[in-house]
Structure formats: C-alpha cells, structure tokens
Length: 310
Image 1 (cartoon, rainbow, N blue to C red):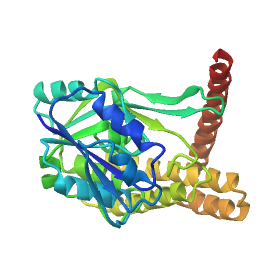
Image 2: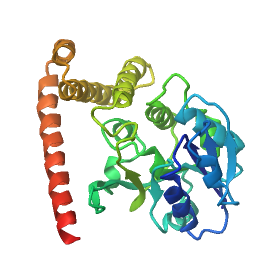
Image 3: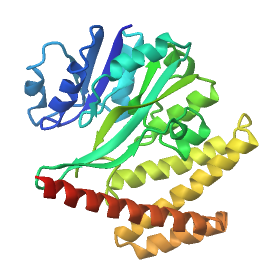
C-alpha cells in the first residue's frame, strides 16, 4: 500500500525539517513525499536539497488548499494524507494506517491529534490532546462541533474521485467544507483511538492564535458553510440542528477573539446579531469562555511544570 504525503509550504526553512524527518522515522517502505512550495524566498528550497527522496515543485499558488489539490493531482499513492510544514507524525502511524485499511473496507482511516508548543526555556508542553474517536468521527458532528483534524486522516484515492478536490471558495476553512462534503457523500471512516498527528503551536500558526486575522477568516468562512449547507435538502433535521449549534459556537468564538483584540464595538455588534439569530447563543458564549479560560490556565500550569523539570 503506497502512501502519498502532501506538504504545502511557504518560507518554512526553520520548521520543515522536523516534518520531513517524522515521515522518514515511520520506516515505512512504500511512500512518496510531495513538497508543494508556493515560492519560498527564505532558503527553504536549498534546505530541501538535503533530502533527495522528496518530490518538490515550487510555483505561485493560492494558499494551503491549492497546494493540497496540486499534491493530490500529482500523487501516485493508494492512500493520500496531508502533513503541514510545521507539524509532524507520531512514530508508527503509517503501520497503524495500513492495518486499519487492511482490516476493513473503509475509505478513510482517522486517528487522534495533539497540539504542543515549545516554551521560551526550550521545554515541550502538550497543550491539548484528542484521542477519543467519538470526537473525530467522520460525521456532521465530528467535523463541526468535534475535531476535524484533516491532517490526522488518511484517504483512499477514490475519496477524491467521489467527493472532488478542496474548494477554492474557502481560503482557510476548505478542510471543514471538504470533510462535510465527504460525510454527506457517505464516505466511510475507520477511527482509531491512537495518536497520529502533532500540531505545533507557534506565533506563525495560521489558525491557532486568537490575535491572528487568518483565524477570524477561517471562522467567518465556517459561518458561510453553516448557511450554505443548512439550506441543503439532503441535510437531516438532526444534522441541521448540529449546524445551528456549530454556528452559535462560531459566533461566540468571534466575539471572544474581537474582545481579545480590543475591538469592543465589533464584538458587541457580533453579540447582537448572534443573540437575534438564536438567544441560546449566550449559553454557548458562557461555555466557550469557560473552556477557553480553563485551557489557558492548564497550558500555563503545564509550562511552569515543564520549565521546572529542566
């Protein structure tokens, strides 16, 4: 079973080596690794020359998901997966994926993920870990209110023939839309309660920093998705209710981000719209706010412990 790994990249010289090494560390005999570079100018391309096994193209593109599509079109593997240039696979993942496909007729094998960061003292801190497969099943709840973790999923090639490529309409949320399209098309999933993927939190992360405009873009695109898919005739009443709950959660997240960014006027305008749409929004805001504070406290505590052990 040949596995194709697709890594979109732009100016990641300092981080991409770890991603490449995590693929090599799988010790899996039948794979290819595509680097789809968007025109790096920081020495990334010269760095990649250290790895002759890589298949590299470098040309202007329209972002991460355009890179995904280019990789899918060029890949030759039976199975395709997407590795971000600043992340890494857990050792042994490819073997678990191969067994998952061999033991079932599934079209997707999905695993767990975690988010980690490095402290200023050089210690590693696990910020969040998700290995409960109920949270990342390939269904409407899993890809909206759950953990979409597109990078911890491995797809048979026929999935893209059945569903199509990532949509160019979404610059930051095309993964959510693709997974939603896949689940509505009946794509089968085999979730495994093992850690597959590690997301690296850093100041340049596109969608993991509350002050990052790209995160707001992703959320606003997701709000568009709730509108477009909520009106589809194929959506069941249960799934439509899930989309409404996801929309309330997204609105609450935007409110919190705009508050953090010091934009009270925009935050209050968002609150009025969200409350008018669905008064239950205030409950989601309280829940999301409590969870956000809890996550920050937990990460701070873990950072202190990690630094103390050094």
